[in-house]
Image (cartoon, rainbow, N blue to C red; front, side, top):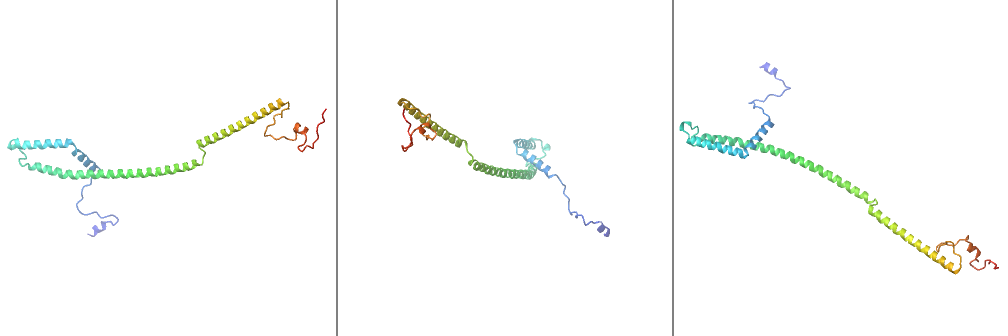
Length: 216
């Protein structure tokens, strides 16, 4: 007894008492149960089961009495069907639970992706708003076109005004030539006469007191 206590180690957990159940791979068992549930949910399983039960009934009814292994009331068939139902229900539930777990994981992944897409969409919306604000202070193509059109109109108006002034100057020079006067050498209507003009130097001062040129 003392030797047994000495052999016990305190740094290791004590082994549980009782019956040890065999260990199995839960993933492999789950795939197997899903395969069974998937097979039982097809039309082939129903057809095969119907054929087996029909043959069972005919054999145990029409065959000789010595060859009937399950005579009426078909007790053994009832036991087989009960066992099948008792195992089919847990297998189907296990397959459904695994499918529910996959659906839950898929829903979480979809939710994560939706959250990421929402964040990306909000970021892009903010960037687009910032670009719109920045572009609001930049000259657009329509604004440049309107400004260029306005400048072109102003240039056309200046050109037309210049043409009218030149036309008036030409008319004035033609009238002076018809009257026998010398033209003003291209002095415009809007240009003031300066002191260096020869005609102004030979004429009298505006107040009439200036010297006059002697005739003869």
